[in-house]
Amino acid sequence: MVTESTLDFLKGLKANNTREWFEAHRPDYQAAHNDFFDTVVQFVQSVSGFDPAVAEARLDPKSCIMRIYRDIRFSKDKTPYKTGFFAYVSEGGRKGPLAGYYLHLEPGASFTGGGLYMPEPPALEKSRRAIDSRYSEWLSIVTNPALLKEFPEGVQPSGTTKRPPKGYDDSNPAIGYLKFKGYYTQRFLCDNEVMASDFIDTLSNSCRAALPMVDFLNDALSEL
Image 1 (cartoon, rainbow, N blue to C red):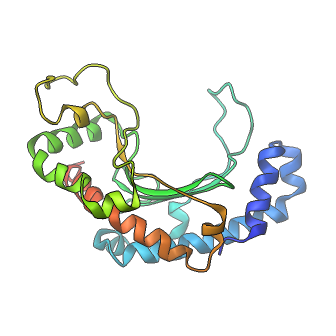
Image 2 (cartoon, one colour; image 1 turned 60 degrees about the vertical axis):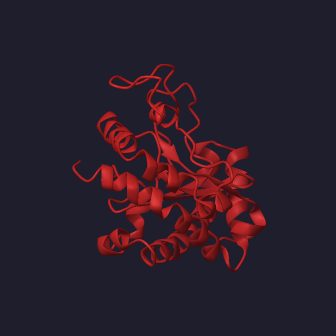
C-alpha cells in the first residue's frame, strides 16, 4: 500500500537527485519500493480479473515495474534517477509491444490509464490499418461514455504527424486518429487517492474502462 512515507521518499529524491543522497537514503528507497511492489501485485491481480489475456499470462509483478535508474548515456539531463515509480501491465509485461495498463506514482503527478504509448513503427502501422478498416468500431470505443467518464480528455496521441501518414489522405474520415503516433488514456490521481484504502478499486475502475480500446489495439497487433 502507498503511504505518506512512500511519497516522502519520492519528494526527497526529486529535491536531491544525486547518487550520494540516494545511497544515504537507500533503506527509505527499499521501503518505498516495497510499498509500490505490493501495490503492483494488487494491480496485476485486479487487471487479471477483467482482462483474460493478462490473467492467462500469469505475470510476475517484477516484470511490470520499470527501473528507477535513468539511462543518461544520450541525455543532456544527467540526473541519475527517475522521480517516480512506474508499472506497465500487459500480456507481455513492461518490455512487450502490446497495449496495456499503467500506473505512475509521483507526488502531485500520479496517473493511470491504458493504451499504446509511442509504439515502434510496425506496431503503429498495424494500429493505423485497424483504425482505418474498422473506423466505426474504433469510434464507438473511443466515444463510449464509460471511457469518457474515467478519461474526460478521451484518447490522446503520443505525438502526431503534420501530414497524413503514407497511404492515407486528408479525406479519410479517420485521418485525425491516423495522424496519431500512439493511443493512450490518462487520469491524474491526487496524493489522497493513491494513499486511500480503496486505491486498487480506483485503478481497476479506470483501467477497466480502457479495456475495449486495449483489446482493439492488441487485436491489431496480434501478428507481431
